[in-house]
Image 1 (cartoon, rainbow, N blue to C red):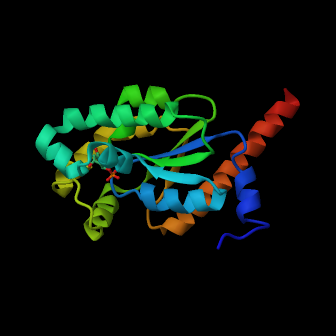
Image 2: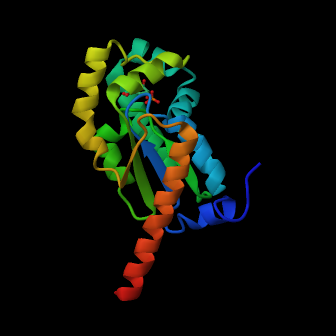
Image 3: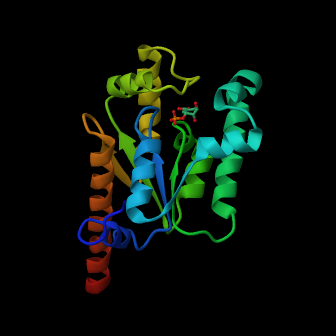
Length: 199
Ligand code: S3P
């Protein structure tokens, strides 16, 4: 059950009064989906995973799309789904977890760079991210071996660094990461308030 009062739902919701959508971005294994669900619960927002939207729209798994249609097709579908998510009817505030490659596509990052939309980069050492993926049941077509995984992480990191916030998830549990995000959102809002007052 969600707590009310200090640190609970009421104060957590106030932590992000300025934004309507929080995007969780970052490499495979960063915990975007797990943290996203926890964060949405604390904010009293809805949660969605972009890969789920893709799979529903295509009636195929991500794995099948990669195998049958290739990565370029997957990226096109991913872009269309992100567009749909953002241009749908007026919706309540939402947390969206993106697949690891989505924010590294400049056309997606452009769609997400608008007032009221906040991107958070969940980072971590690639070795740890690789191990986390190993413990999960979902198969990932772009996770082949540690060496390639590390190289892809290095290539993408500069894109992820363009997110509004970066949270280091290394050695942390997902619950602690969600707590840290709420605290950072709250901090960020007070900074904006102070700036508003002094300006
Ligand atoms: C991908 C990451 C996956 C999924 C697809 C492509 C990537 O999502 O979108 O396999 O390019 O890094 P997760 O980051 O949730 O594993």
